Image (cartoon, rainbow, N blue to C red; front, top):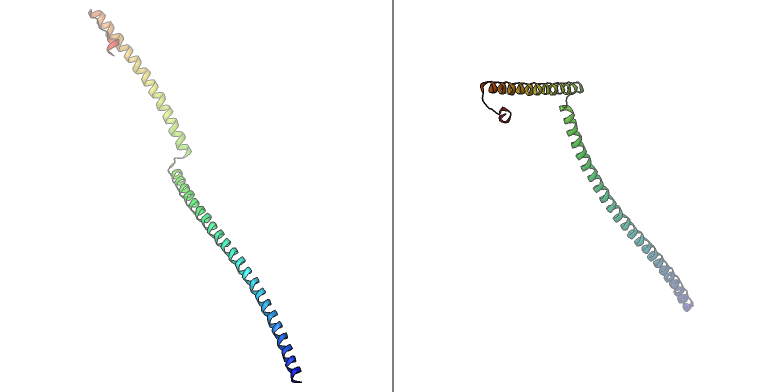
Length: 138
């Protein structure tokens, strides 16, 4: 009877050992799944960090571009503020055109006076009996 008791205890211990061994295997499988998940999460985290870094660089580049464009816009606004109105521009263009016409008239009058002067000097020189070459001197 003691032998049967020992066998019963032994069978219980074997069953308990088998169950414990099975639990250990289940725990190891669960641990391996957890480790794979952790590795996968680390890879995803690494990829996300790289993407965040890339997006930060893109954001900084866009901020720099915005700053540059704002500076150019401010410069253009400054130019526009210094510009004259269309009416004033047209009036100045007309004044310039009138001045150019007046200049042309004065040049023509000067050329006519110059020709008159040369003719007078040549006439005087002929009458006085002198030979002058006034056209070459002027």
